[in-house]
Length: 249
Length: 238
Ligand SMILES: Nc1ncnc2c1ncn2[C@@H]1O[C@H](COP(=O)(O)OP(=O)(O)OP(=O)(O)O)[C@@H](O)[C@H]1O
Ligand SMILES: [Mg+2]
Image 1 (cartoon, chains in turn purple, brown):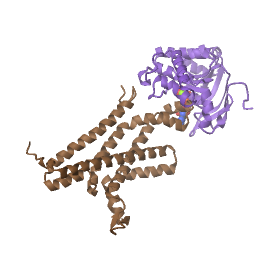
Image 2: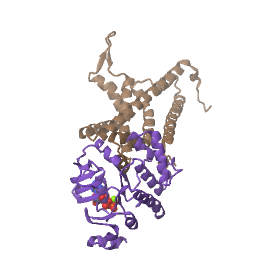
Image 3: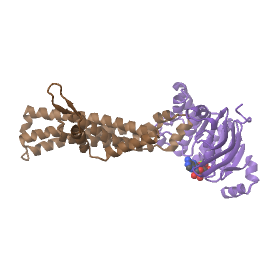
Image 4: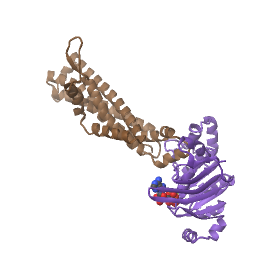
């Protein structure tokens, strides 16, 4: 039995240091299938690091990480990460598209090159996804020719093309200007409504309140408080949460 | 015109010397350019393995061959090796010959010199690919090799093409130093001709023109490649 409980993502007592700097000091978190969980918290509190531990981009020092049937902390090689990476997609703050490939190629690359899916079939899927993120007609544009918001939606389409069960969003609107934030959030909201399991690091409190099933507040490498959005935003229990919210709301 | 006398150019012997010289120059440039790029690739790839002893070897190689004059390297391979006993004996005449011919000595030293520069250029190209882009590739399931082939190398290649153009055009010009160790390339042939005709100025002007033409062609081809590979928003892309 690999799973200790029914949730799709299970983190238990994760610790992670960079050099002498302990960034995660025992993070425990469960995310059920179809759930949307937002992580909020001050800069440097370890939010991105939590996401990176979930898809194995960085190894943890201590603790237990499970995604579906994969025990992430026990995988030693990049090759062994493949099935996990297929199941968990990630979208980054700086989009991180491949600049030498067109938007459509960015979406198609990994399914064809990594998953070895049939290019013709992937192409259809990619074109449909471009339409889904409202970028029909931009297929042959290069990332350098797209606005930030458009690039971010390509990145979301690229993640979706892997047909993942889970998507990790790391402050995906932080680098965008206010108008384009709306387009990207609309796209994410649709995914959540379709039942995609999402873990979102975000500074958009209104958005978190709207879409999240649960909101976690992190500070100094710990999840200080975790509750449904109405409870966390309206009646925060911990003084640190209250202070943070008073600054950002 | 301007008192320049090019009548000697009509002499088929001189024509032969010069044409052969250009041909040897082209061969020397081609061989050492290809070898330099190959050395650069192997060296830069070797450094991505992150083995300290391999890194140290590559570093030493780069320091030695980048920081010494190619002319000195040619003299070393041609004369010094011979003096310390690296010779072959001709079975027919019984005469001692240098182990490496002048052409081979020149080709080796130019390859090593260019190779050292290429390692540096390719390494900085690979380093220029943002960590975040590589992380995105990893998050999509690319393994180290796939990531290198599909993402890092294509981006790095575009980053280092301008420096590669510099290195290869310089290498082309440096082939002229092989005349010192009697490789019958263009510069050497030119010397032969003007020591016969005493038309030094005319000869030099002509050699200059030939080099300008050949190196410009090379640079133009590489710049064209740069343009073709460019993607919008970066470098020569718009
Ligand atoms: N690769 C790394 N090497 C060294 N230190 C790191 C590394 N990644 C993160 N850190 C450190 O870990 C801490 C937490 O970083 P993290 O990126 O998780 O914060 P964050 O909560 O996402 O912040 P932000 O809201 O600014 O994105 C920071 O102090 C950062 O300096
Ligand atoms: Mg972050």
